[in-house]
Image 1 (cartoon, rainbow, N blue to C red):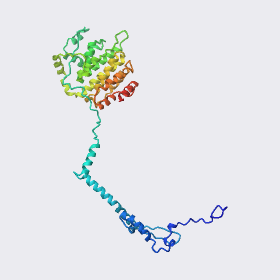
Image 2: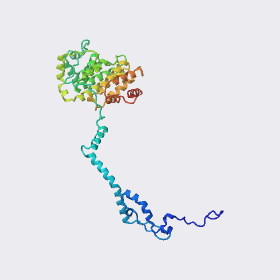
Image 3: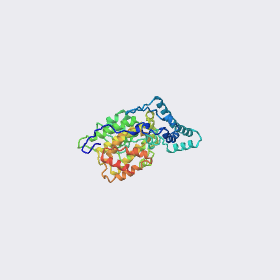
Image 4: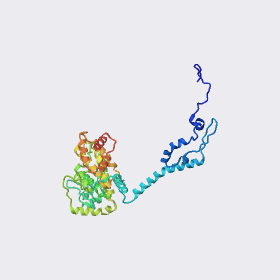
Length: 398
């Protein structure tokens, strides 16, 4: 540095780097400059498994102010061999461990097998589809549906012929379309006839389709009649809906109708013979799905057209009944659009809300003992209305 007052040095050359210069120039009195370091390097190279001569690079030091290092191809090969010598013991040890683990009967292999068995997770623990509940048992023959004609007075010769006919011929009136021609133009809607058609919804599709069509047409025709006429809509009671589910094959005590069911064995035999062919052509799951769809559609019409037709107790009973039916094993892979829409309407029809929410959730939580089935039951309620969100929230709580 220069004297004070001069801000810039006159010599801009970099300071000398002592360790880059040859040792001979700095310490000429040492005849063996490398010998002093050899004693210090030997412990290190003996640990690594090589020699300093094999690992040390060959350095050519040029005289003057410029120094450079020249790496030869021989040095690169020596460096690669030194690295291989260091890692080869580790590779041998790892290979020995693998052989020990794969050797049958060895303690290491037994220990590894126990760890795998303890912490392994099977892919079939959580199935993609819920197991379902056996709600509907297959029926080889439909239950009889008898038309109660005791309080009906025929208004025409054709109606008198229909009412006086045996059950087999009455079904022929329905399938041939004569029953529609008899009651639709006249505007007559006798309740025993509507109840009979509703029970026929549980029969095979060839019969239930015609029964649903006539039941729907008669009900809609009554709603659009002039105001001075009787526009009341007949709605099946909770007991009648439960009886229809019993006709579909329910075996659970919670789905049985409260009253005794009386059937005539001769009528059962005669009516079952009429549907034997259609029973063979239609799978059980398809027939069950069609019947449930017809029942749900008609109940939706009843709830929309007659808001006060069902009490809160009946609405809760219908919701529980429908949710249990939706868990049937045969219906697991089938869409349940009609059932889900009906559940939304039934929820919105409850008058005492949210007072009945706790009672409803307690009843639905007892529908199944399997957690996967309960999850499928929760998914029956669509997240589209405030009340359905309330139900989803309370059913998902622990």
